[in-house]
Image 1 (cartoon, one colour):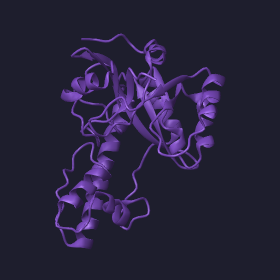
Image 2 (tube, helix red, strand yellow):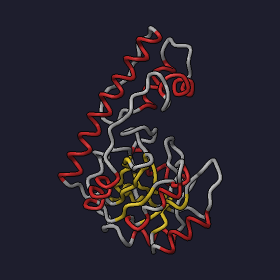
Image 3 (cartoon, one colour):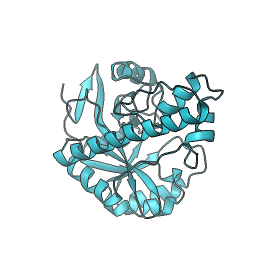
Image 4 (tube, helix red, strand yellow):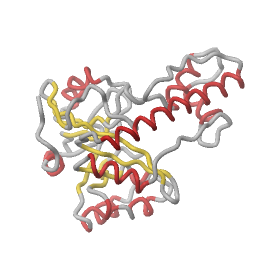
Length: 263
């Protein structure tokens, strides 16, 4: 499949490596015509409208929002975000929580190892930033080891985030976004439970670079039964785009639900 739209991309505003300024060139290298910037719990501050055009590339203002269900946490993708006061208030709260969480994890690791970590405690900070700081410190530990030894979900220095409930998340995104999709359903411990949310969604992330088995027939069945959009993206945290995404017909269906591009 020829990918023309990568609808799951992160920038340094959260935990990605691709600056917005470099996005158009990266998209052209990958043959991608449209990109959704979906940073964690944050709208990119340099995207001033739900859909814009930058150097010939359509850029969709999106978000990846983690929410709590009764059985675990999942991620929702919002596309074409028109910021509301309620969403802004929740994102501000989430960023304050992220900063406090990173500070607490940093202090725990520093106390444990007797090292100083250079972690920028600012909006967008997350565990990857802490892990990179560990790798760059005097500790005998690399990036992966920081997760394995300290800040993995069961690690001694781990601090959980306070995320909204799935009901609240769907309410906030439903008011702000014309398209809300379930991110990577087969990355969760219980994909079937995640897919039960389908009647409350506009789409399902159908195309994604999974490392494990995926029941594609099940995804297609859910999408068809609910008359949902099939979304897709590479979940890029580096500078490579187009590893997964939508072909021209698939993107046209999503684009028809989004506002017209500005700029």
